[in-house]
Image (cartoon, rainbow, N blue to C red; front, side, top):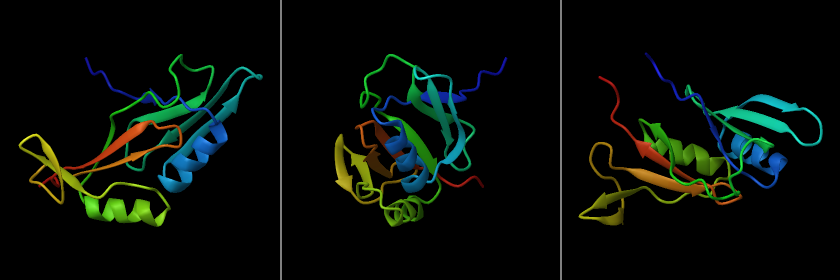
Length: 134
């Protein structure tokens, strides 16, 4: 039996602001923007190349905006990904790695280079570099 993660709900305060952030600054594709009355709106966005999407909106979940932490995106070239996101106006940390339990600026070994950013509500994201498939 396959169990695929298809969607993660991200709690936000301002749907239009979050939609602009994720589509314009992060480069996510807008798949759906649907309202059903005043109490329900869903905006589904998908990172390029991902099989999993996020949804923002109202009437979706009982999480407080900014409480979702540790969402992770993986790339094969963290420098190129970071440069593209900075070029889109995203505030993102320098590339960092962990060594002996301490975070340091720069690149680590395989699976050990990261950059961090938050959406306008404070939901936290990590970008991790993974080795290219050979």
